[in-house]
Amino acid sequence: MSPLSQPSQHWFQAAWLRPLIFLVLLVAAWDAAIRVFHIPPYQVPAPKDVIITLWQEWPMLLQEAWPTTVATLWGFFLSAAFGIPVAMLIAGSRTVESYVYPLLVFSQSIPKIAIAPLFVVWFGFGMLPKVLSAFLLGFFPVVVSAVQGFKSVEPDMLDLARAMEANRLQIFRMVSLPHALPAIFSGLKVSITLAVVGAVVGEFVGSNSGIGYLLQRSIGNFELPTMFAALVVLALIGVILFWLLDVIERLAIPWHASQRQDFIIAA
Image (cartoon, rainbow, N blue to C red; front, side, top):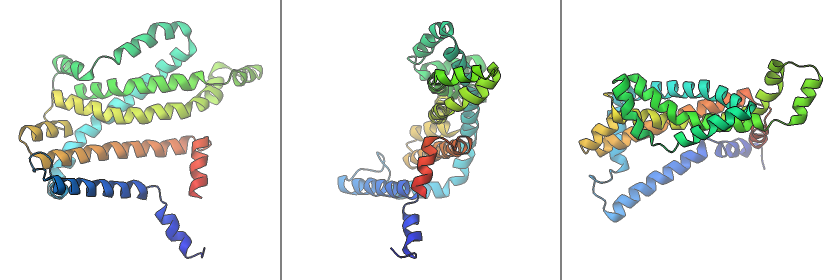
């Protein structure tokens, strides 16, 4: 293979290009299905109409995306701030695990859409009910993944650290936390996407702003192109936040096997 062809091949194998190609194929299949099956616009809008709506209504969509993003981030930060310490308690104490863990599992069987109206009754309209909805959806994945990470630490490594007279803080900082970080980041990735859903659920129930409010208004007015455009913006919010978290993971644990494998493939 000539040296001139190597850059073009590397560009074609770029990680961002493959999902983009797949997205283009999906949009083409969407447009073809509308044409072949003669689906009316009041049921499913054409991709062209959605793109036009995105172009014309972009300032309004961006304005509505901001409160949804803020609620998502606050809910995610609360999930991480509370979820990781709770996971440490569960992983470090069988007593805490026997009391708390079953209640956490039980809480996941309650539909969050049924709890969200209570937040509106208790805290009124505003940002707090949306943040709490995002927190509830994002909390459980962080706890489960972090518990798995902390429990998977090799006992021999802990015994070696104790034999070297390391205190509890040093053992946590040098052994337990680095070993649990890959699992913690896995839970955080799931949490950030569920936090987006939680924020939208909170906007569905009681809000006068945000992507969820825009979706509800568009459905009520049968403005399907606007609704699909709002869904595109919502998907972009989730993808961007997930990508930012993935970048942070690569910077935080470059030594992990998954990151080394990506580096080898890229090289």
